[in-house]
Amino acid sequence: MVQDSRPVLVIGDKNYSSWSMRPWLAMTAGGIDFIEAHVKLRTEATKADILRHSPSGKVPALKLGDVVIPESLAICEWAAEESRTGPLLPVDSVARALCRAAAAEMHSGFGALRNECPMDILARRSNHPISDACRSDISRIEGLWVDCRARFGQNGPYLFGHWTIADAMYAPVVSRFITYGVHLLAEAADYVATASHHHAYQAWEAGARAERGL
Ligand SMILES: N[C@@H](CCC(=O)N[C@@H](CS)C(=O)NCC(=O)O)C(=O)O
Image (cartoon, rainbow, N blue to C red; front, side, top):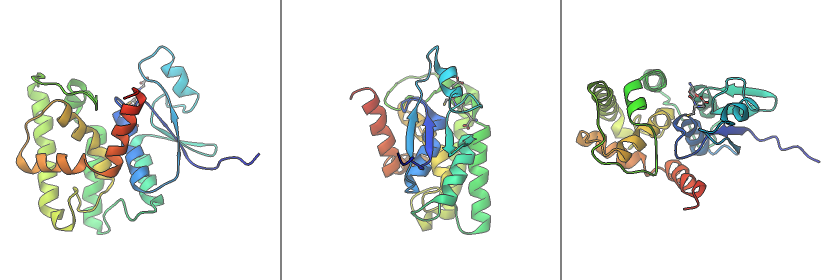
């Protein structure tokens, strides 16, 4: 029997797993042929199920033969290098550094937003309470997006013009802003509309619906 040598991306539920969404979008946008392995989150078996794939005990994890790459941002960077559809990082070195900074800031920050507004991509909630700390995370993200769009908007509709791993990293935030009906500056609201219509975002959301039999 011929063994399938394609990369395997281990992910959690598409409705909830914000960290899984990021590299899935990057690999999909990059036209990489990969297999999905699914782990159901929030069950008694979750930890053991993930540990069968990755020693980190977290999803996402990318399996390349007998090598396992944990961490969403590292997988996004790998996808950028392996992309078949064009660069997933800006070509200009300064823009590329800013793109990596934006992605890293998302990876390491915005704890209040993440805790108070968990990703629930299919849900729509009104009057969700938002603390000062969460409002401050939202303001920083708006500022970052507006700055990116002002600098790179002439090159296309995404944060750095063409779609990059920064768009992958902020996609779950886009989803949260939609779910919780967060009121945003006009430029940030425009970006939410654009980013949520990207083909990879739409495909992930369709997957979330399919998981629920919708
Ligand atoms: N820093 C990690 C975070 C991964 C993470 O927290 N994943 C969550 C799902 S979105 C998880 O695996 N939770 C299962 C658990 O902690 O048992 C990354 O960027 O990949």
